[in-house]
Amino acid sequence: GLVKRLEQLLSKGWLRVDVGHQVLAPVSAELSESPPPKPEMPPEPVEPPAPPPEPVAPQEWDAKLALRELWVELLPHFAWMIALLLGTLAALTLIWAARRVGKESVEEKAMLAQLAAGNLGKEEPQAEAKPEEPPPEPLAPPEPPGPKLPSPEELEEAAILAEQRRLWTERISQAELAKDEGGIVELLRGWLRNREFPLLTKALFILGERVSLAFPSDGALAEQKVEFADYLRHLDDRKLPSDADFFRTLNQHAISSTLLSQSDAEIFLSLREEFGTVGLSHLIEKLPPRFAALLFAMVPADARNEVARALAPELRVELSEQLLGSNRISHEEQEDLFAALDSARSGLPLPQLSEPSEHQIVDRGREFDAPGALSSLLPQLDAEDRGALLTSALQRSSGVLPGWYEQILFPDMLLKVPKDLRVDLLLEVDVRALAGWSSLQPTAWQESFLAQLAPTMQNAVRANQAFGSRADQLRFAQRGQQELVAALQKLAAQGKVSYQEMLV
Image 1: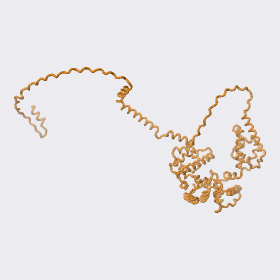
Image 2: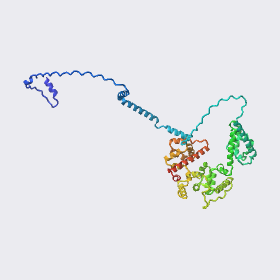
Image 3: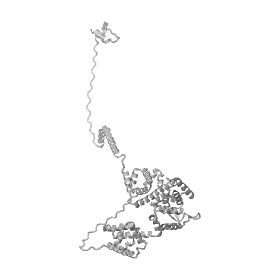
Image 4: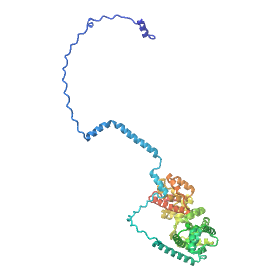
């Protein structure tokens, strides 16, 4: 049964296995005998045990031994300690980067604060060394009760005020206020015209009612008279200036009125107060080119742009050519021009003004503001006309532009300065002055100019474009013009920009 089961296990598929039996040959006699026993080996000699080692004396404990022991103890732990330190530094770096990257740094905040305050690039005034305070004086014994005597300073101030009151009362009493056209009358009329009601009220209280005789009755100041009467009806004495402040202001305004009452200053002032934009443009058109250019240069700076826009294009080119030729006015030309202005103020026909002949020297006399006038005229011209005028000016000056041309500045000149140089140039200008100058430029140019500035500078300029009055705006604009001209002159002196390229 075992044989069949073995055959079945070994046979698979086509393989068939048969199990048989075979008789083995008998074992030889040699192999059937047991082998002889091995001879016993003599025992190996046993060595005597080594004597125990002598005890080693302990080393003396010192700093070197302590450091070595510490090194041996810490050396296996250096790997995880270094890993922990580097992991901590990496975590701190990631936390700092997450909180600081993309945000304004301390330096940027400081620059923004300086830009907003308007003193970037300005040296801070050094604090004056404070003198050592003297030791406190011993307390004086209390004064006995009684009336307090005035101090010497108070007595001196009272004497000055009394003398000023006497002097001005005498001037008012001697002046023919209803007929006179002198400095005192013009001063009082100027206060009424400018609605300086507190000063007028103080003058009535101190100098008497004769002050009101200086007010004209031709209706020119009727509106101001009604407002002044209403002001007197609801007067609050606490809002009036003190006597000292009143006389100080009165003396200052009197000197100013005396200067303005002179004939030449009065004629020049009439361009601001008696002529409008259209009237000035018509007067310029009626004058010969040379005198028209001189009159345009005399127009107040805040009205030049409006007058330039009101002129005909051909007249702008002609005036620019005349102004580029010379920045000086002779004494004869000034007298003729003032005579023409006086006639225009009086409504009389203009006198005949003759142009200088070819044999006369035009570039003589005192300087006038030709760069300021050209700064208003040149932006109104086409680039081709500016190029032709500049080429003609170069031919007259033997290929070298006159030095006073560097005082000309109009908005498009800044856009022709390379961007990296423009950034450095604007940083040298007070942000308040830059805001004032840019606020007088056309709106489209303002937006284009501000869009090219850095966000910090943009915000600073926009934040400083709010002015308390028109006079403040014009004052900052004039200051900005001067600082921009100085910055451009600095770049031109370094050879980084060319006026010949910027003026075209």
